[in-house]
Length: 432
Ligand code: PLP
Image (cartoon, rainbow, N blue to C red; front, side, top):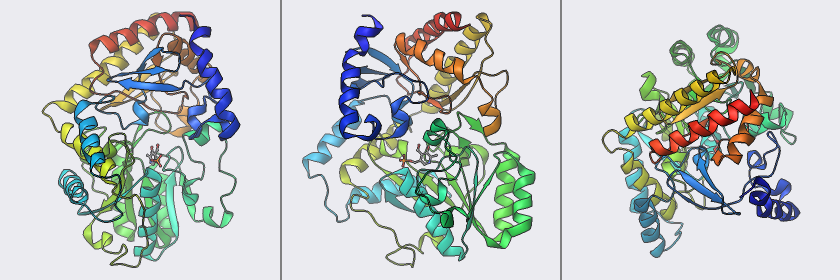
């Protein structure tokens, strides 16, 4: 099948979608604006693959932007969802399943004594911020350039991900009055953080950070950066929020907090904990969480929060990721992919390097692995775009923007990785 044939139904669907949906998509990065071309409309997925509207198969390296850690349509998860759905889709009253998933999250992440379920990562970080502000009585928050925490007003300040793709430093419609409370600092810059606390430490409600950043490609925090954040928050009575919506249960069973051995006061979770369904959460020390409604003064609610069908998918996923050797296998897969891509690029004489943490990986069209947003932005975007389209033609679906991390699932077997590396070898030669 030629590329033109392969995209024909996708083109038709995209044209139709744009009539009723802004940009034809329900989340901006799906629109391929950064790389150009027609987004693929997906009809089904299984294991490490999905198929588009023309029946073309792709090896999927976005995994629904993180949740699909078990691969697609894992039978145990599908069965759990079917069983839950058969009992009713939503009750607006509590269920035992919500207790079970809360207990599991608290058991796996010791910094979390109590947790509140929500339906998206945006809700999780937005609510964690409100809690931090409510608990401290302070307004100012600190975030880092290139970290994305969802689209709450206070956080759309030079945010990464989709916004980066469009090159907008902030979103229209966000009042200046909200943004003036958000201080945006450079990732991995300890001195800047120290300066901020020295200047206004007693006004800062919280620091929110992606401890392994996945929205400016993949960038690891240095241990010193996270430790200084922990120490400064403790010293000044600010709340440390780890946004582990993406890296939680993705970089390891204890998330980034386990990997670095640093306990935040609050954690935002999402993606993997829903196993592909809308479940997210925020949680932390009981003394803080007790400030939430209905027992405390900080209000937050949700019609579909803790939805029984979604919780069934999440709980089954959390069980399956605890199988012996799961993260070793996942990391080995991501490392093998990155090593193979790097070799293939070297053979073609292309400046390229990669990094992987657990089941997340980064690909950089630069000589060195970036440590900050500005270093990441210095990568060769034009070459990435050609690589992206070359790989797409070969049946390999990477994230459609240079600013995104990639994801492998436990179903990405040697055959899928080898096929990817062979395809990359051909594509690197073409774009070299
Ligand atoms: N926080 C991080 C680190 C994310 O990567 C994302 C989404 O990609 C969010 C928050 C927002 O999550 P959601 O898209 O579920 O609202």
